[in-house]
Image (cartoon, rainbow, N blue to C red):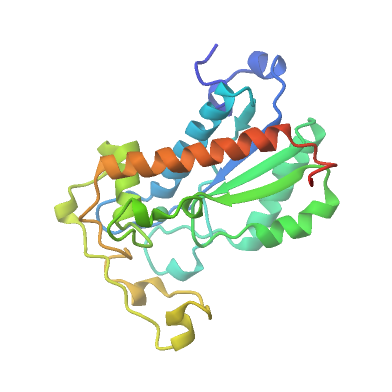
Length: 254
Ligand SMILES: [Zn+2]
């Protein structure tokens, strides 16, 4: 018996047959450049790490959820000119989500949480479209929106900055290059005032926004900051999973 029965990649058919899973968690990330000091799998390492820890905490409280393997490709249409940034279009992601949901539905796992770890992904519209066509109750969380990072970091940054670098220093320090090799992650702001102020939006052209693919200065990052922040994030997601596991999908309101 594995010591992590909530990690599907680590359990056998025998264990799966004898466990009643109340819900599934699907981590979904991206494969993309993260400044000069973090690896292309950064979003995968983070999102899987958070899913596993939140599920562990949920199991401690009796909520038997199962974490599916992470889908490692995200929407990266703004990074197509960066070598080996791999784009998966939203319509393709929608098709992947339909197939995974149908598999779970046929097997009687009737709740699915998509844990998203990449800013270019947005599963809400896909869920709106899919929900009327399936018995599986669908929900999504962007893990980087769960806890306000202001109390944990000097300047969290948007991509490969202090927040992400701290999280990686905590989860996978061997994959982080010396911070002296990192670029400053300076960001060129839009000429459109609405975009600058955040009430209008247009997709970013990454190589024009940043010289080193990062947004946010990573130099104040530490493993201790990452650990404290992730502790808060995982505790809240675990709490969600406990409620989610107990939820009757036919009666989701008070
Ligand atoms: Zn990232």
